[in-house]
Image (cartoon, rainbow, N blue to C red):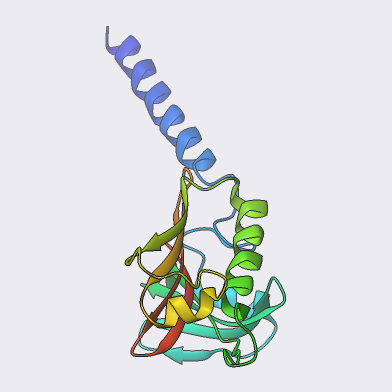
Length: 174
């Protein structure tokens, strides 16, 4: 009886080790898994990052769009990612530059995470007729865009919105 309980205990431990080892078979972002130490991120980025309180930030480019990638660290290990896109467009000359950036990043996310659970506009006012000038509608607060992915290990949310007459294009990975 004791021997069979021992075997059951060993089998349970082995199964849980296998499950936890396979839980993150694919990196969450780039080559990083949840719990990647700060030092490994620093080495892999090949450059100095800006260190904040529990964060490290690097300038980068995703889908040909400049961005700031901030890795949130708990006990020196990665547990959240925030990507803020820093492209500026003059909406007096380009009607949909920010929206085109959103579409490019959306495609990048589809290539890396598959089809989203949800993706599309959130129109706050149906009376807005100039839908061919999407950036202006976003800036006016008439519409925002969002995409959401769920994987086995992460939730990815992609936003394009505006606050205080300033565009906000970002991705969060938790």
